[in-house]
Length: 124
Image (cartoon, rainbow, N blue to C red):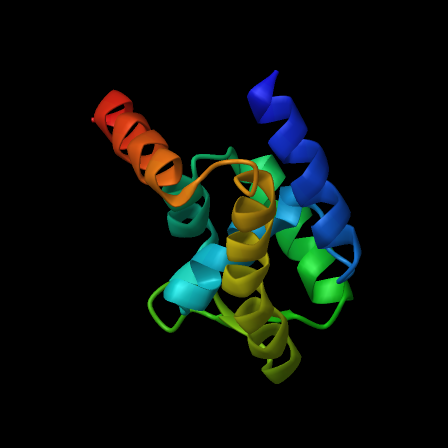
């Protein structure tokens, strides 16, 4: 239930900048490491090849990424952010921080820190 509420809030914020959760992870990954091929990208974010293709098609249609031939493979392409893609990608970390901040606003600072520590412990 908690994850669903966070997803809905994130969906709204992403829609406000013309994105959706489907392409969010792809754009975030490319903002951290450009020049990967499609297979590497899909593996890094844990999605199958067809979904990676669909996400890249959507990002390319929006003018946020470009595919360049891989000099080491005739069949593969390296994926890069366009200038517009870099601009949009820079908006994502502050957007996520804002979503988190809004979501946790009912908690006092001490409670927030305890929650974060507890979640980190569960994840590890």
